[in-house]
Length: 133
Image (cartoon, rainbow, N blue to C red; front, side):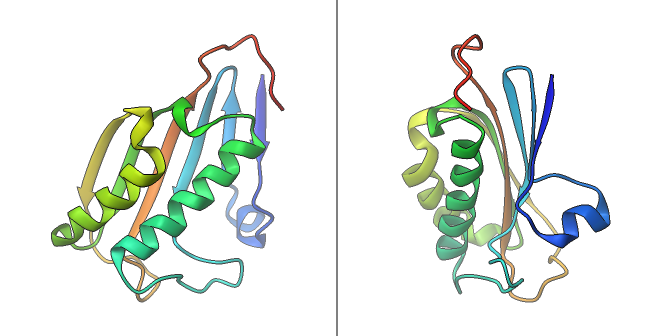
């Protein structure tokens, strides 16, 4: 069974995507930028932006009935690979206990000036029979 989760931003409907999609016991969280509800980048360092993005990811996990430790795959897209340590510090603080699989990619700059990273996550419930939503 499919369930879409929206952040409520108009862009989702305009483009045709969801903040997250749950299929059976798996939750796929879209690329999450360190951007607030007004479209402004939050944080001036990679660490600050990563902390904000991971908080946004955690919020959608919670809304969908998942926890941090349900994370099985995390991808971090970095504009500057030299900021790897800052991004990993924020990841470790937020999701390190999950011991998820992880990929870090160095990418071209994003279209939004000042945006240094984006994160995406896949989570699977340990107990698929338990509906926590």
